[in-house]
Structures are given as C-alpha cells and as structure tokens.
Length: 300
Length: 263
Image 1 (tube, chains in turn purple, brown):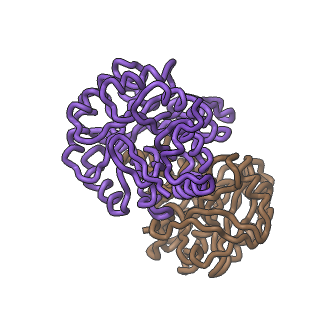
Image 2 (cartoon, one colour):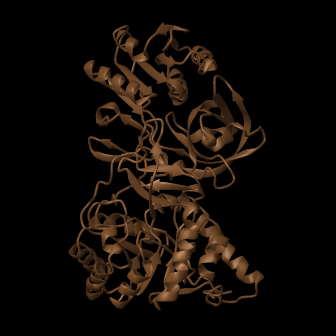
C-alpha cells in the first residue's frame, strides 16, 4: 500500500504533516518525526520576536485559544540551531516564514535558498496574533498575491501559502495566490475568538483576542477546504481540529492532498503517527492500494 | 538536565484520596519516575479519555512514598481535576514528565524556609524531603484556609520540619498572611538561609520582596495557563529580566530576582 503523496513538487512519505507552532523538537522524545510526512516548525521571522503578554493560552469547549504572537529566535538561530536537530531526527522539514513586510518574507526566503534540508516554504500570511504582518496579508487578495509573487520570484523551493478563515471569501484569496504562482495552499489557520475570565472579570488572553484551534473548529475547516478544492487547481493541504485518523480521512475525501495535525499533539504527542497508521488501516480495509485514490472521493 | 528523563507513561494508581477540603493525594507506581523526579517538577496528566476537557493538566509532584511510588497533591476545582479525582486504584493515568526544572537543592544552606499558600504546598513537601535527607533545617510557613491540607501538616512534622500555620480567618495558627511572619523567621537562626515559595502570585511576590530586602536566596514556582507542557507551544510564557520564558520547560521554578511581577 502506497501512502506517498506529492505536494507542490515535493514527495512526502505520507500525507501527515505536523502544523507550525505546535510541534517542537521536544516531541522527538515521544514520537518519531521520521515516520511523519513532514514537520513544519514554528514560524520564522528575519529577527527574533518576543511574542505577546500572558496569558497566551486559554482552554475552551473542545478547543483552545492562543495568542503567542510569533515568538521565535529569528532565521539565523533557526538555520544554525533548530533545523539541524530536525534533520538529525530524520524529519522532512517545511519552513514556515512570517514577516511584517513583503521584504521580510523575501529576505527570509532568500536565506533559505542557501540552506539544505528545507523541502518547501509555507508562508504564514494568516497569523491572527500580531499587529503588523500576518493576517492582514492573508485577508486581502491583492496583498496575499503580492507577497506570494515576491517570494516566488526569489525562492528556489516550492511555496505553500497558509490561509486564514477570518475572511469573507477564502476562495478569492486562494485564487489570488494561485494566480501569483503559489504551488499549494494550506488551510485553515486559527479562527479568531475570545474568552472572558469571569473570576478576574477581564479578557482571558493578555492580548484580548486570539486564535481558536482544536476539535471545535474542524467543521469550519472542512467546509473551507471543500470549497477551496473546488475553486483552484493547485493542491490543498487541510488542517483545523484534526485529532483522529477519521478526521484526516474526512479532509482527504473532501479533496485535501495532505493534512496537518496541530493542537491534537498537545493532548497526545503520538497523534501524527497514529493518524498515519489509521489512514493505512482504512486503505487496507477498503481495498485501496494508493492514498491518491482517496483524495476528493466525497466531492459532489 | 531535567529534560532527559521526560517520558510519556501510563502510571498505575496506588491510591487517590481526599486529604483536605477539595485536596487530593494521588500516588502512582513508577520506579523510573521515582528515580528521576526532582522537587519542583510536575506531571502533565491527561485527565479524561475524550476531548473534553481538551488539554492536559499540570500537577505538582508532592513527594516520594518509596523507591517505586510517587505522590501528587492537587485541588479538585474544575472539570479537569474533578475527572482526576474520580480515578480509582488500579486504573492508570497518562502522564508526561517529570517535566520542568525543579528547585535548587544545595547543602550550603544551613536553613531553608518554605513558604506555601493553598495548593502551592504541593511541591514544597517534595523539597522538604530533599533537604531533610541532607540534614538541613526546614521551616515551613503555610498560609491556608482553615480546612486545607491537614495531612500535610503531619507529613511536614514527621519529616522533622518546624511548621507554622497562618489562616486568613484565624481559625488555625496565626491570623493573617503567611508573609507577615516571614521576616521574623529569616532572622531567627543561622545562615545561609534560602526561601522557596509556591502559592498565590501576591504571596510569592511579597516573599520575593522580603528575600530581596534581606539579600536571601529565593526561588518561586510560577503557574501559568499551559497547553503542551513540554516547551513546544510557548503558551505559558512569563516575563523575566531576560525576556519571556516558558513556565513548563524553563520553569516552573525561577529565581525570585529574575521574575518581572505583573500580578
């Protein structure tokens, strides 16, 4: 049985990718990153960023809110210290790139041109937790296209654009980045939300609003993936609340070429491996010999 | 470092009993945890089997019962800890740990003062065990409501600790805040002395201020809302003099001098 998946010109050993911001190298001690399709470490900016004030996370019904704020140590640290650890663990690495300006995206992409071991770039134009950069690029078709085209013009690797659900029409954004040369899109980033701490009588998150993730958002994500698959011709990577193999199968039957696992890892560090195994079991039991036979089969 | 022992295990429950008003003492069997755990570390426990509540709960290691058994102390105050409280002997818990850095245990201190408030007493018992094993004099100042962990008092005393209790309502021991009596205990004996505090932020902040005034070594165990518990998500960041640091992986124990207090 063949779980091999082609996305944006790169071949993955299976369609299960660990989502940016949720899968740190710490998880290498609980699960084997080499068994996963790919790992997307936390978004990297040109310089280090310190992130948002506490509290940054808040549990909600079947989900959680976060407002981390793209905290990271910058591209140089990532290339010199973090990437070698992932490669040492046998992981296929897709680098998530974030920036406050188009120029910042371009400069990080240029630095990655000279780095071995990065299979593709994922442009995070959808982070809801920063004042500049992030979501405002992903909310306007023109800006999303501009950042995509700018990165594509310099990058020597496939470019995946990660989309936000916090827009009126995600398909417009998807079409715009496809026209600008994106090799694939991934969706969805977190859904904007908030909570009130009634004991303190104030917003639960230090930054007031944050991004909702976890099982609670799966139906929202699935609908957006289904519609986006119907609107564009480049591959769609589906994510949002995937916790079980069945969840992953829903996204693939809806047309996603691969899936990402995020928040579920916090609950069960082996979720990625379990989803790989569960997809394999499903294919065997339903007499498929290739994962690609499954993609989009539920589409009407 | 502590991280090298971090594992995910199914730990068998030996007992899980009420030991005070809403306080539970959970003991589990694990030779590897008992061998590697250090005072101040915690377990990140999956309290339910399903997805509600979603996240694991960080629970302080309370001490070693013997070479194959470790104890946790927790307060059942929400849906997650209520599920934990419903677990019975013979069941297992899914735990990641021992997580976090742990308190400093250093024989150069002649006396240590443990300052605990409410459920903050949980990791201090383990620390008392560690220091008493080195023969260090241990003073315990416990701020409590009237009916909090009563068995903790007996446990501290049986370790040979000198225990003083304060209660908000004066129903037991000294009436007032535990930090009211900290200063007199700092000057009450020989040095070098060290202070270790765990409890409400206002209590730890006050203890840190007093430690600063007397130029005494002081560590605090911080609490913050936590998601992954292993250092991956950066959700439990707290501000320090060197920038944001993770309670779960860089802490939960921090030098009182490096904490930037906001509460």
